[in-house]
Image (cartoon, rainbow, N blue to C red; front, side, top):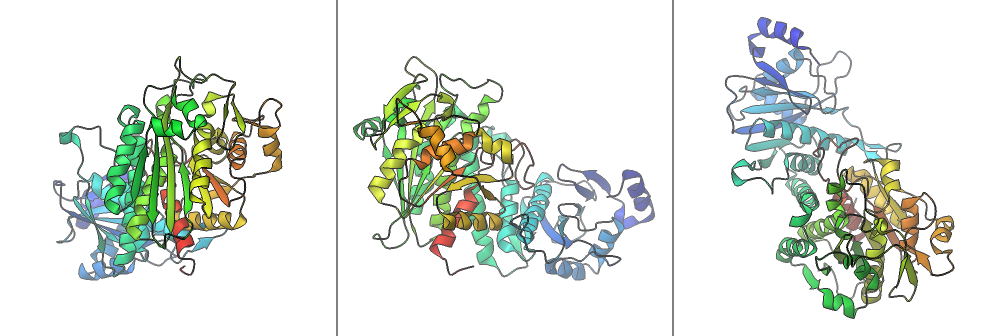
Length: 528
């Protein structure tokens, strides 16, 4: 990229470039003419990586725009040394009568596809990155309507741009809340793909909003209300179960954690019927601890506020349900979400307490910091008994081992079915939100069950926290096909290796789109 001194020389020698250049947080340079008025329309256009001595190649929409401008766009690209490097580019103002600002963003190499080593469709992911960075740059400049080049992948362009311009603003005063820009597809006939991308990205944004809310504004009761508001208009059935019902069902493991807080627990049963009612559903269970202080085993105070997103697994499942309904997928889904807080108090469970599960096995709760498996235990058993599912999937932020191993690179998955793992792997490679399989071996099962005074413990023995948590949950799923997704590194605060189209230091809403893609593959196996 040009340094400031060289660019000043270019500006002096070329009137077309006599514009102020500033660099924003996305690495996009702004070439601004005049007073840079707020508002107006913007356009995101992709440019492929330059090959040899050839000029950079624009996308088909970019070529049409360049022809309309009499070649001026390519001239500016060459003079400002834009080479098409992924995510890098410039914003040009006042060069087109229809668009106040035009963001030229590198899409990387043309024609790239699936990378087996990365387990990622790089063509799709590159479009998400380019569209997201371009849309956010125009949003930062104050554009209220942003048109996005499909770059041959309309669905992915919609995902990247919609995710990039979203901001958590619920706690800001009305005067300070930024208005979300209107996003439009530019010069492409793939309206269906664009619409699918909007549905998926807006679902992930719902998960981000639920996860990022302060704990006092997203208690179990308020989370349940937000779920009703989000899902009932879509034709999804939501049943709210209160303390009396939970006690009648004898869900002791759930109540052992919930009783430490003055906030009453709630259990939600959510159903979507997209095919014949006789067809067996897919059962999802989402961990819904709306604030996890660690209970008596109190967590360090530093950064404890991040654990308001201990229910991000539940938030991703709720968002998934909304997107599935919007896409009208032909599949039956049931979702169970136990909601409570894990707090220290005189009523809280003490380390070493034992409870009897619905399957008549005794579980020792030796570490209250690992309350996730305890909260999910009885709801998981209840769901299998009630719905007789074809497949069980649970989504939770459980072991720190996943975060230490993968950072934010992938969600860990544990499964007793190779087919289910391969379906999730494929879904992650298409969405850019990857999953990776970790072992579910007898070695870990012995570390959680080889006890004399009780049947299993919630923490096990050893350092493999994520594998031990999965081993506990596996004991509760005796015969069904099952997958456990541990989102400890991906579903909470984005801090390391940040995805370019997601905001840093905010909740991510992951892996919502991967869950939706997985269900799409199950519902429509003949489709690519």
